[in-house]
Amino acid sequence: MKTIVVQEFGGPEALRLVDRDPGVPGPSQVLVDVHTSAINWIDVSARAGRLTAAGMLPPTGDTIGGLGLGWDVAGTISALGAAVRGLAVGDAVI
Image 1 (cartoon, rainbow, N blue to C red):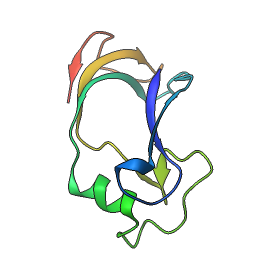
Image 2 (image 1 turned 90 degrees about the vertical axis):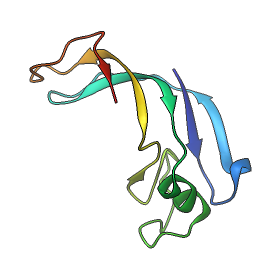
Image 3 (image 1 turned 30 degrees about the horizontal axis):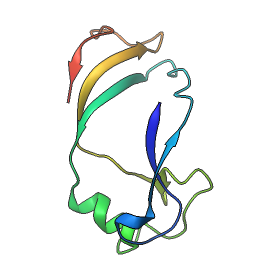
């Protein structure tokens, strides 16, 4: 899958598009193929290092200080964990 990672604080130039194995969802998780993602103030502020939760970048770079980026997404479910009920692969989600 393609994903945007942040490995340093900064402006848009800090964003990196990389290939990554999506892995398998845990028992109560879903994997979503994201079709659309908004850019909101939390994402921009965290990337710039302006949130107190930002602190230090983790080694994976796809979250900042435990704050996941990409809060506003829409897409379809591509895989389900074993304990997930009421959803199905192919369901549209936001």
